[in-house]
Amino acid sequence: MVIIPCWLVCGLQWGLMAVRWHFPFVLALLGLCVGLRAAGSEDPATRPIAPATTAPPVVPMGGPAVIIQLAGEIDEYNRDAMFRRFDQARAMGAKTIILDVDTYGGLVIAGRDISSYLKRQNDLHVIAYVKDKAISAGAMIAVACDEIVMGPHATLGDCAPIIFDKSKGLETMPAAERAKQESPIVDEFVDSAKRNGYDPLLLESMVKVQVVVYYMQDNDGHKRFVDEDDYKKLTDEGWKPVPDLPVPIDGPDSLLTVHTDEAVKLGLARGVAASAQDLAAQRGYTVLAELTPTAGDTIITVLSSPWIRSILVIIFIQALIVGFSAPGHGAAEAIAVVSLGLLVGVPLLTGYAQWWHLLLIFGGLALVAFEIFVFPGHMVSAIVGTILVLGGILLTFIGNAWSMPGSWQMPATWMDLTHGIYAVAGGLFCSILLSFWLRRFLPKLPYFNRLILTATSGGTAVNLGQSNSPGPAVAEPADRWPFVGTIGRAVSDLKPGGSAQFPYADDTRTTAVISDSGYVTAGSKVVVREVCGSRVVVKKNEE
Image 1 (tube, rainbow, N blue to C red):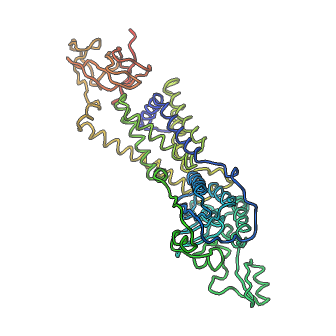
Image 2 (image 1 turned 30 degrees about the vertical axis):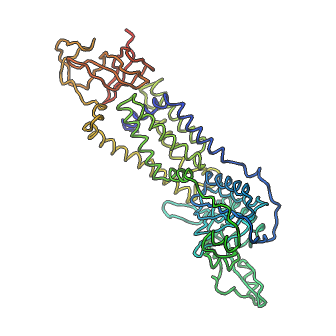
Image 3 (image 1 turned 180 degrees about the vertical axis):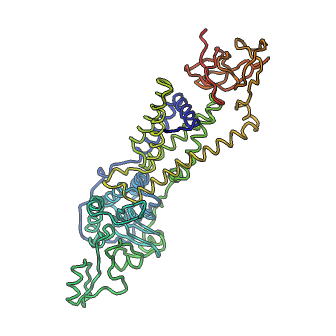
């Protein structure tokens, strides 16, 4: 038996009514997010493609250059922002781009898009400056550039899919599953190796756990990267491991991850610089501009964090509760719509929300609407709709997990899923506590105490027919005022929430109500149909 909290069902019901009357605003907000994403998006395949070459690029010295920062999580928003900044740099007349990379990685698809794009820039010399780290998708991006220069204490490598098992943690992936995961990533690394003069076996070891790499040299100083079989043959011929480096460079149970000194010795990095500006000074570049994330980019990054999204969940639920307690004022409904728009719109910009996630959310709302307006009382559609809404919000934390086979076994997917569960469940739990606190202290605060229904009849005499008229004393059981069947007058337009005036003993009082018969103009007579806690449902009195 599934038990749905009353406050959650009531909140969703009022949320549907709020969306019903603010639907144009919802469309405008989502349209703005989609428009921003589309404005910054450009298909990398439409850009100029450089011919493939296996020769190492010539390092230019001097000339105009632009520094572009690529930091934080790699997602579709950062990808599109980087594309725009490359176009800006080209318009400024830059011939060299210093890509300041500092990331642990992110979405695989976005990383592959950036990698492919970088290898298509035939009119620019792109240098990846690894300030601190280029891990996973960051390593894929770095090796796609024409060359790599690292900071004094930087790290590069480790781009492999790993199985996440709840009981065992991280473990090696079976051969068949690993082949599915590794194939497109390995192809991207090998292609970068051929274009930029790296050893394919060395880059392959960043992706494949089972690859073993030795760095050998003969008596004449010739050096080679070899696997286990060639290592034995060369050893018999008198070759020796290159000194001051691990033997092997990468073992059968690890992924190649190198620090600055090792990267230089292995030929992955062509130099060391204290900063991107120091690199430009070493090469004699004239820096035209430093293109860094704007205030809008920073806001998107902040709003994408699990903690902020958890706060948005709390705000969304509390806004529904307040709107339910005092409908018709507009502020609470607007806050609920804006918070829901941010919960869905920001993941749309970053590529974590897919269109079918939105279909789940709005499909769930439609089912709850069916429960309220078409076939009330059976609760099946309300329960299913609630699950779809919460599930749709949860899935916006995962991103395009279905874009590659076996993605559900990758640790990044499980980490995103964990963040989503914490954010949604934590938001619900905090909302329950906050709701109890508000119910206890809100009636004691000025102004807010007028929004909470606290009056009970206590056996007082009430005339159900008209207001401002004393009626005969009729014994009534203690109940929540106003009673079901009480006739009053709409003080404001009910759209569907608003205020109505009802008789109270020898006087009248005004309270917040909600109409279940659609729009009701101010001054119309209404009758109370249902009282549930502080929720007063009325309909227009046609008699």
